[in-house]
Image 1 (spheres, rainbow, N blue to C red):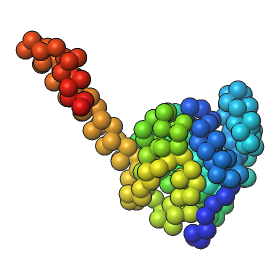
Image 2 (image 1 turned 180 degrees about the horizontal axis):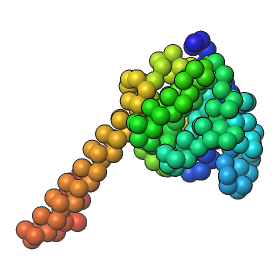
Image 3 (image 1 turned 90 degrees about the horizontal axis):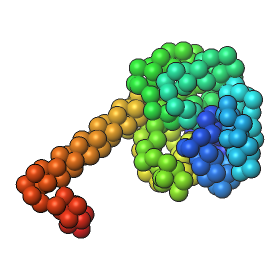
Image 4 (image 1 turned 135 degrees about the vertical axis):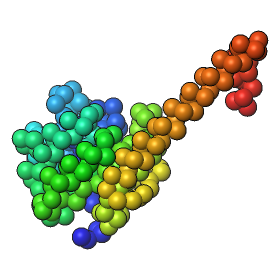
Length: 213
């Protein structure tokens, strides 16, 4: 496929992540078409200059790169392959990025369902949370076709400041899973370490302040 940078971006899911992503994309001059089941979210995106579509299929029809930012695996599957889903508007060269955090097996299922459609599927889960989304400093780890990744990179750069292509389709979800595992391991170690300090008669809060220096 061509490595021409995309300019028309679709956002399916205009919530706490999708809405600020829409704002950053619009601020960088991208044409954005969005969809959400929540009318208030659609109105907020429209105020940012996004076009609002009645369903995910219509988003795909008006976009070169569609980003899915919904909460769960079942929702991601529904907006891709369900009635009026993205697959219904499939065409060669359409790039579909799953920014939701889903299981690697879900990516394989979506890939199988889209086989032969011409759609190029990427997985690109978002890391660092809502505060980073607001200021455009997300971490995005992408798996899938490298040429499609390069085409989408300028759009990703509008809302992320750390962007990596880390392998084949599914690698992004594995990267997010490992990131979360390391994060929770650190949180657990911090908790246990400060609890140990308390049992040994050292004020955990004073110790915490010292360790933060």
